[in-house]
Image (cartoon, rainbow, N blue to C red):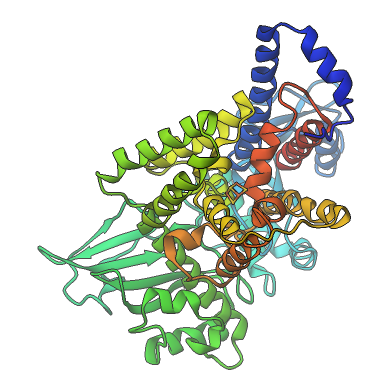
Length: 560
Ligand code: SF4
């Protein structure tokens, strides 16, 4: 393999020969572990929310001086309050920030941080905007509204944690509401970061389930069973609890989707709450109430519908309607994926045997066994639908494990990541991945093979790395895009339901008849991730430095 890390292969081969086998092995394990740490660190970066903030004390003091002109220094903090001291160490007042608690409260486009300055009894003297990730125009409107800022003046510290109806800024209500919620969160208010805080009630589901008596949370996040005294009446999905937040004209909506007891047909869609604008919201609500185009459709029909107007046509409110439609599609897609991941007991021993055989053949197997095992892997893919993909890794990183994943899926992921890192052999791609196996079989069907000219090979080889980079950059930027759509793997478990994976799947397999493992070489971001683990075993290369650097930058951005 040509090393990308500016390492002279001849020199390295000579150096390797001079090393003892044990030293080479330790070196390979060490570098492999470092590469796993880089991936784990990127995942952790998605998961963490910083609890402690670094504070620019000089900037705080300058702000404090606007209220207490004699202030000279900030003392040691007590309960996250900084004492403002005069030159003679006399206590003049206190200062505190609304972060980190306010970080969880999203405004129109992001959270805001406020500074609270109080007198010696911690009675508020001034609340001011310190920094914001919200839209500049809305933030400026709030900044210029003295009535908004003065509403907290004179209040005691203990009263600030009560989130009562605050005075908002007309034209910037989302931004000002988020700031007020952030301030209440800082002083102990619970659940204010959740804009759709109230729990589901029976009355919310009676339009579809008149006999409903109980709503029971299912294992799938954001999904609920609706029951009468004895039997299951159907299911309800709730977007805010599933983490689906597609923004309409002015904000996201909390959407409910009711499904029949067989999990096949949609009984109805409703907007439970919304941060979007009137009158668009009322138009969409009315449309859903009176001529609900979703009713009676199968889940798959809705997922493949290309245009929102086919099911939800609201003239003059297209952005709100498109957002509600997109939310419903993503909720159904996640629901179907979870369904596909549900296992029955006999699958476990069979799938574990398949994985064990794949690992064994990855080390010992020859060319003959390759075709036979490729058939097994394709069958396993069709029956089980399990594959390692970026959507899965990002999902685990972002949300953790609400319920532990199935043991074979966990084993497959461990095999895919640990074995290449520790041995330099990518047994997942060479033997186990059903999509790779399907391409292997397709490549065997025709004798005539093509190879890209060197220049095109170089250009297209960059595609998997670029897609990997873009996917993780979007995830770290907080994008809610369905990353499963960037890869073809979902098709194995859900069929040709979503357009983009179906196109990638079809084109990838078609190309591999002529271009061996065409999608693996020129399209697969997961393949790129695994190549990262296997390239130049035992040597730190430029590729490692770039990956470590990018993850370090991600951490800096997240923590700032
Ligand atoms: S490169 Fe991608 S599609 Fe190909 S075998 Fe590896 S994971 Fe599967």
